[in-house]
Image 1 (cartoon, rainbow, N blue to C red):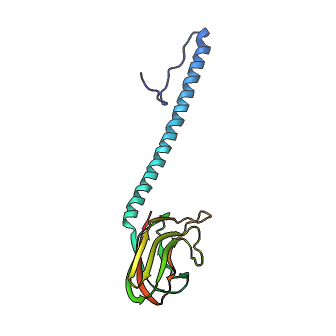
Image 2 (tube, rainbow, N blue to C red; image 1 turned 90 degrees about the horizontal axis):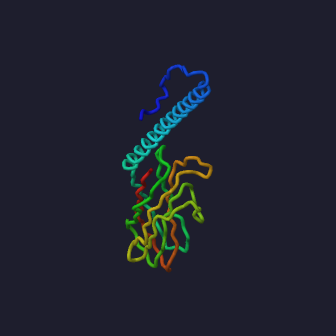
Image 3 (cartoon, one colour; image 1 turned 180 degrees about the horizontal axis):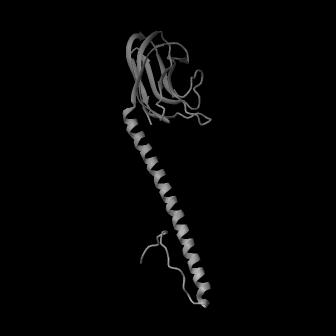
Length: 201
């Protein structure tokens, strides 16, 4: 059965008089089908263009994600005090196209110093400067313990941080900051190296 082509041109009607109303109605229905076909064709073309654009953007984001995994580090000093005490904040800058950050492979390693007793701490990641209680948007990416035996990571939890503000604005900076508090009485301080792998996507 031949398909309907909206560009088809039909011959002029030459029906006998009594059949003319029927012919007009058939021609009207055919023209309506041609119009509907053309609209559907245009909508499908628009949808295909939109899908192609979305897939292209997704492909670029995947490529960029592989290319924009960065290691960010910070040397910190922790003392055996009651606390909680905030350490030094450090940051990573977001590429313009990214909307999320995956903070993973967060580690802590000994640099120098000594301590008696012990402290327990955490590293938080978020999209704003913070002190006091971490904001609800902050994510815990590492727990650690420091005592006379050295430095021990307690848990390492990869977290996704949304780089979108409450009003839908794009946020440009990822903040990381440790906090610690005494877990057993003692004294001294220890310097450590904190590192985190940040993947933008």
